[in-house]
Image (cartoon, rainbow, N blue to C red; front, side):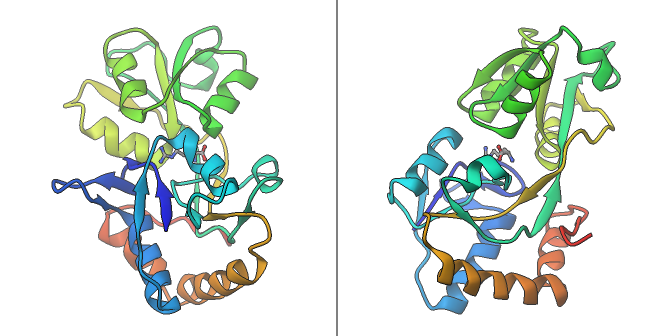
Length: 221
Ligand code: ARG
């Protein structure tokens, strides 16, 4: 049973039938097929994903989750399978052209994300939204000057705004994505790490990114 927040294309998003699809769903389907278990998906806002893993509400948290030391205190993570970064999204006619221009500006982010943490640490005026789409809407309606979100999601969702927004070309952070398990899941995590090792080496993971037209950035450098 997987807990996920499907507002994060191309990693996980809702399809026309209300199901969840995306790169991470496909990786998890491969993992489940290999382990011989059924894949069951539960949907929620991102800020509930990691707490639910800790509380044992489902077996895996999967949401383009960035692995970091703070989160590793409360959850076990697989090795990373991809390296993302934070990006800045602004309106097409915005005077903001780079990170330095964000100084003192109003910025929208999704609640409980690394983007929120990053923007708070940088002293921006942060508006946090439970749903990614609302963080985007805040930019479109002019409530904020910029929206900070993971780079591939920024490109995907910005492309859906009909030219109203653009993504600035500045990688701000390093965000290794992995899958989260409750503490004490060492043997299961080790088993999945072995699969990820194999699929990172033989191009299986990269082929999935190709399928979604996303340039693959290996976490192994
Ligand atoms: N990578 C970022 C983080 O871990 C953002 C993840 C947001 N995921 C989502 N499904 N909305 O905080």
